[in-house]
Length: 255
View 1 (spheres, rainbow, N blue to C red):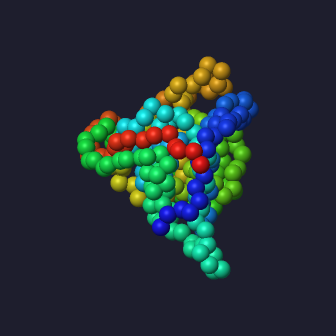
View 2: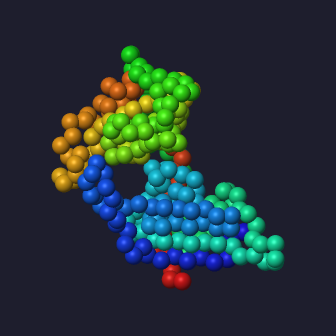
View 3: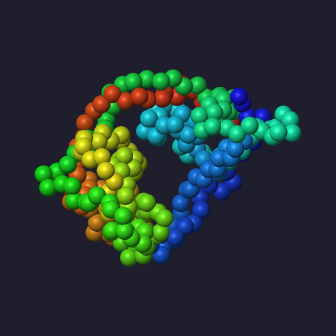
């Protein structure tokens, strides 16, 4: 199966203004929407689209042109009905495979898979860990996730802001996914923890602009915060990693 109609255009204004800690900052936000008959992405890089099409995290993609993660595109892809019954509903796997075909056709994307040793972090318990508790109904977050500002956020199992995350009933796998985005390396879970937990973590993000309200934060680094606040430790290591290598890619052909 392939999409019958595909539209790809450079995003006209990839940078928007958002408010964080009552301060206006420039952000680049990607939004997606899946429908029964298609897929849409706004403000998406080619790297984001590849990660979506192959169901990968960013750090499992290697190589590519210098604009791989800087040029932004709006994409709309749909299939059309061949009769009065309407278009067939797509599964997630079908949608990913069809998106791969779009990338090969419009971006002339060519890739291959490799397994090679790469840098990771091992996540393990410290001597006094863990410093968080297993989630129980109507306990810590009876009214929803409560951020450091004291305000509740009903229906949100994990609330993430720059330098702050609060989670309700989350697994270590969800925490690892978040930490992977922050430290930019895969994380191997060696904690042995299999339940759902309530956590709160505050740290000072790296590469903060001087104008950011977080620039003067006294919060620790993410590594110190994980150890002191969660009773966990991130240790550098290496492990065999499955990597998708980009052999070639070109800017998309016009519609």
